[in-house]
Length: 260
Image (cartoon, rainbow, N blue to C red; front, side):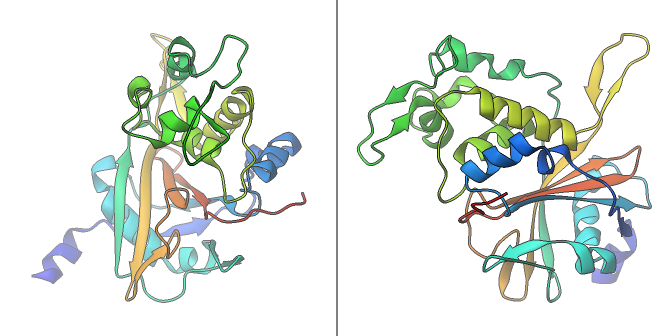
């Protein structure tokens, strides 16, 4: 009986936070890297507030409420045919997958060095590849699940996913020879999006945000983040349950802007 299901849902409502800024979309050196990686003008972050208590087990209801909320429908940006548009049409269902998010330092990238993917000087180790003439061990680790490098990192963590998205970039991505630009940009974005708290007793820092990888479907299929299935087209909702804020981290794969 569908009416019973509706009754058990927690209904959230949302408001845009138009003054919230994200440093990775303002910092000039970061923007220049996003341009080099063909993501500029196709990557975005938006902030909304919400009105009910959020619990991770409620992620699906939260996501469905989000994509059906009038304020979200009017303000949430997605890219279609190279232009920013809002969600047209009714969202019939959503996919919401909670992504592990517990890292509070960049130590999870240490295995890149110990495995030889990155040299001690920070250079990315080149390798031979049949179809990609200019290939390296880092992209092999990120993309080829049969490679011996594939298992060197915890791949499910949000911090890893941000890193992977930055490293693989957009359609006309110019790749880096050294790891630092990827690590620095990943750190900047992660800090922008993820909330932490310090335990007053133990002084330990822990993540309080819940990260949800989302997509939305209308009558004709997936409409968000993009109609075409592509690993580098993504959207994550990053929920801070204490502030009752949700940040939307979005990218639509394609050819990025060439000017800042």
